[in-house]
Image 1: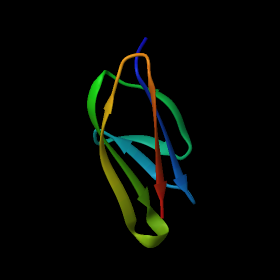
Image 2: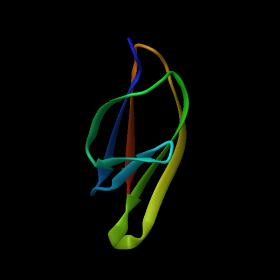
Image 3: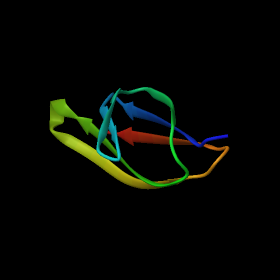
Image 4: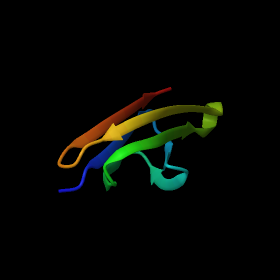
Length: 68
């Protein structure tokens, strides 16, 4: 079973994972390869972003929440 990533943002944001666009939050259950990944959430009205390095494990869901 692959690992999954879900991303939420308050109030909202655009999500990239490993540099690729994944749409606006909420982003639910993105299937990823196990290992380290870069997650970035952009909040355009304030020209702000939050970045994080995460490690996902097979069979688990990781949930990231960005607050602006």
